[in-house]
Length: 180
Image (cartoon, rainbow, N blue to C red; front, side, top):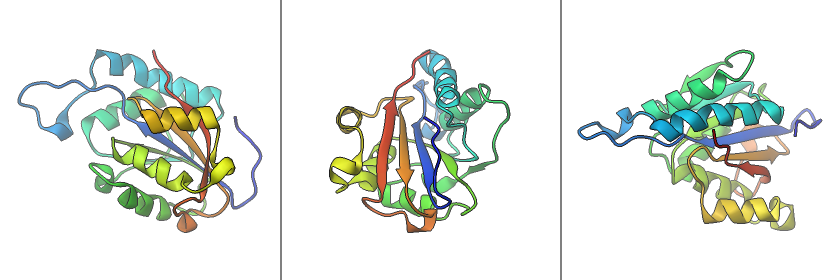
């Protein structure tokens, strides 16, 4: 999937954390991955590597399950990219996530955002809204609209700099749900 791009083109990869456990008495932000999540997170990393989408940088929710998802995914890459754990991503709505994207370093070409539902799905739908036939692959878009499962990965292509990211400025290039 790695494609040539113009100097201003950007790729945003939006990963929903892998399946978490629900241990009794554990605060939401401290919930770890469950057995399926421990299998699926490395599969997400492999998929990104195979697609040529190992990110230049990562912005991740500080919740335990997102950190674990990222750690297991990154083990599939040659090196761990620079990572920022951003409190704004935890429990964020689409507009809050859009602000995170707008603030990304302009020198970065491909960025991975690791977050939670419903924000990740809302962000992808917002960024591709109103794009019509150019909004992305029809089958992938229908699947994403219906459900954004754990370990789901949306790959968005943007034609300009991060700071200009807004509603309808992205194209869905792919939507995958790797399983381990």
